[in-house]
Length: 473
Image (cartoon, rainbow, N blue to C red; front, side, top):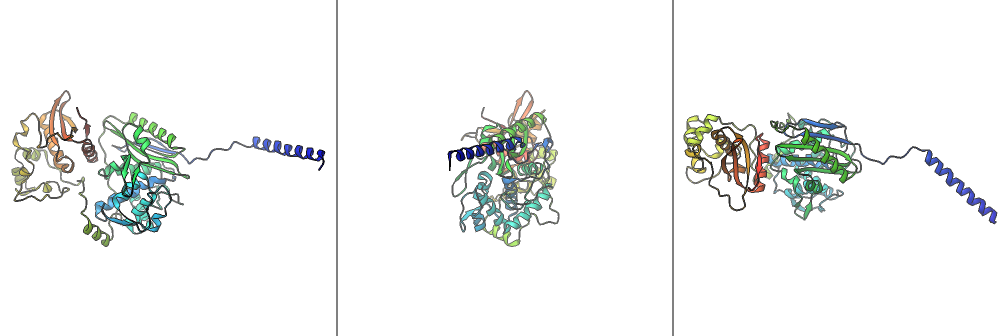
């Protein structure tokens, strides 16, 4: 080839390059791919919507799906279908799920409690699938139960296809529905809610870290709930935070990165705290109404297996528990045995369980009575400046809770007594104490650890009772 021909070839290639650049310059700019954005903010106490954007658009929920998987797991435990100590054999299907995962092997045996921790904290796909199969026998059957439960909770635009949230055709939800689910998790199962705030946890085979740890560590008052990410979904998060008497839940779908998503959720929570009233009556959401659908009842074989292998956990008292009148509460403070006998609510040898059917009976020698079982309920309570029980505040129990401020000491003492009877599970070892302040008479429980105080407040708030933790000093 001559030099002239080479030169002509170079000129031709350069001309084609210029032509290509000209064409590209004339084309409209390409947009970076991102999942659709949606958001929802509510006052968790009342359910009032404080902000929404595309809240009813059906989008990919990703691992927010595991909130429903865990909700059903908690429900199954409460029903006696399975227990925290039930040993689950990992199937090949669960073991083959893609990351994020715990790394379980087919045929491996592990307790349900560790699968729950891994799904809640690590967002492990293999653990979530194993939970669904353990409860319903197959992931398809579990997905049907997920959809029945979603319908019963009012999640009208949600369809689940699997237990872990991996992208699947038709597996869709909305920001509104996931916010609803987050609120139900808090109110319906407060005894498990602390799972979502753990920075790390023991998942049986190893220790795992929370996928939401950056947000939990950086946003004041944040204590949950769940992250989610897939290419189709983007970066999702349902977050809950508490400051003072306010609790806000914010949901974001379609974040472009963990950092920007967390920043947006923080902005939405701040908006919620600004817009929510300082005080609001707690409007607890109703439990799911399944109707004639089989939503919560497992096959008999599952129920028998669970009961024979492990004791069922103590259920927290629900809204159907009998409410004692103020007159009876006063009489109980003066002479609890006589009051119960005269009112006909219990024999003179009544146990604490007979007052609150949500509490399991406690075996005691002889004919133990209520007054003997709780020696702190004495006639002189109404005259003493402080009402206390038998427990010392030593041993690091320097925390307490406040359940209200009242105009008279009698009102404060009455509320303390009622609260103690209704929440024996968390306040049985607490000191009841009335303190005079500028606001009136403060009704306090003291002698608790920090964790005990937090748990007590969660349970009381779920019963629509005002509660504020009190730190040392």
